[in-house]
Amino acid sequence: MSISSKPIKVEKLTPEKPYGLVVVITGNGKGKTTSAMGMVLRASGHGLKSCIIQFMKGDLYSGEWDGVKLLGDLAELHATGMGFCGIQGNPYTHAEHRVSAQAALELARAKMASGDYQIIILDEINNALKLKLVDLKQVLDLVKGKPELMHLILTGRNAHPDIVALADTVSEVCEVKHAYQKDIEPQPGIDY
Image (cartoon, rainbow, N blue to C red; front, top):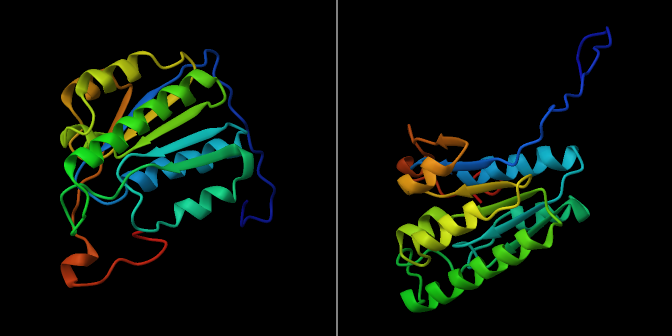
């Protein structure tokens, strides 16, 4: 862990009072899902079990699908989406995307109720809400009804102000510049 020739004492912290956080990762920059996946990696180091439910992704391969499998029983990923609604030539209707997003909400409720997970990530749920694939009341009820010690992470652009108000931690990823502006294609392991 250290490049020093002298061993460093590594301390493990334990909170006096465990608390299940609501974390929102939003903004127009790249890295919201990647940040959430980093939390899954970190949590697995503590032996915590995570469940990732992707509301929009599902029609284009992304490396996290196979990467999560390498974490074994500590993480599972459900790509429930049908791609990004209304962009990139996506062929599905809004109604079809809504049915898919509603099924993802049901899955999230079931995973939360199971008590099997310390972390649940609702990837791109902010986008699903903005596109009216899920309703604000549904998302608020999910956040308010989460188990007390479970961490709930919501990602995606355009986080609704009511969701932001409920959250314990909110991070906004802003774009300064992106390789696509130089006509550089998305790169495996970085962009997907």
